[in-house]
Amino acid sequence: MITHSYTLGAKEPIEELYPNPEIADKSLNFQNYSDVIRHYTRSSLLADGFSDLINVSVNLSKSNYEITLKSTDPKVKLVAFGKRHVEIFNKDNAQKAIRGKELLQEFGVWNPMENYHVNDSPSDGTSKWCLFPPLGLNIMGQKGLTLMHYPPWAVPQLATFNNAMTMNRWERILTSAGILPTDVDYYKTFIDVNPIAAPGSGESEYPNDYFPIMMASAFFDGPKDRDYIKSMLELYLTPPDWDEDRKYTLPLLICGSPLYDPQAPGWFRAAYTDILPQDENKIPQVNVMQVGTFRVRPDSKRETPYFIGNHMIAAGVTGKCTKHPDKIPDIRQYQAQDLVAATFLKLYHDNPDIEPEEAKRQACERWYGNPYGIGAPEPKDAIDKRTICALSQMDLFFEPLPKPHPKYTFEEAWKRCADAEKQDNPCAGKIKPPGSKG
Image (cartoon, rainbow, N blue to C red):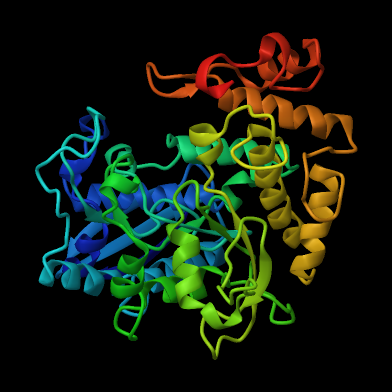
């Protein structure tokens, strides 16, 4: 076994960035912050492709958290992970979120609904907030990056994103776009514009919107001491082994639309107004399926290709069968747009220097049958056409218990589409859902 030790950081800021062990489900048996840090560190190691036999120990020594890794993986790989881990949590990156929290507290807007319910979820209980940077995800092997709104409270409770409905659906989209199951974790890395875990329903819905666009701009962007979002983007978009000859950074998928959770694209519009296309009224645009390039900071070494997509769970929440498959909220339009987004990321892995407009064109040709991504999706490949139908069936039929999940597996949904009177049409005949979805 190879051993490598490093100092993650000082006790006070590190504990501010990891969730209190009392938050986690009792079955995880977290006794202290060392247990929490150990768990998320090991999750990141596994997401980055390290051996599942890897051992992680965490100790508090002289007011610093010390981490020791023992593994059959090469020493150089362990050292690279440790160096990146420290960099993420230092004062120039994740610790900037602490300044944002301090300002929220100073202005009296940190968790304004504390001790009150904001949704009917028994597991969420009353409103609780805690800082939560991207824990347990890739830290150096990512192949694309996603910008989102905020992590749901269930994540620090279960200490994983893997059980979140959003991530489960995104995994289905990624594999359907042709990304190998062994590579899926490398496309699930994301940054939140509000790095605060909070109830997963109620906080972002409009009657209870305590995480508006201005919150990200005011508290997690701005002067150097609190430009958390841009610092984390700059870091994650260029992994440690990035080829110096590459034209671009990793691609960035910006998730959210006017119909569901628009805050990440809204922050992007406020932060990069000058580089965005404008409509006839000179309003800067951040529309779903929009692509382009930007620099995280004016002096950033490389441009970043971006794609604006739906929130990954939007299809399951607002998607339905309509008479207009050429526009949202029709479930077929949702699936095609999401598959284009996933394919956009895959194309950048295949060809890192591809122009974003060309990547979009190729993805749209596949899922729409035209280069623009307009109209009802009409894939030329029969398998792709049935894929849209099967994914639609999974999002249209949902079971609430024992925990929310699709009624049909992908294989079952595939067979329903194959056997339907109107083959591969998820909104017709006996496979059409009843009620509001249909």
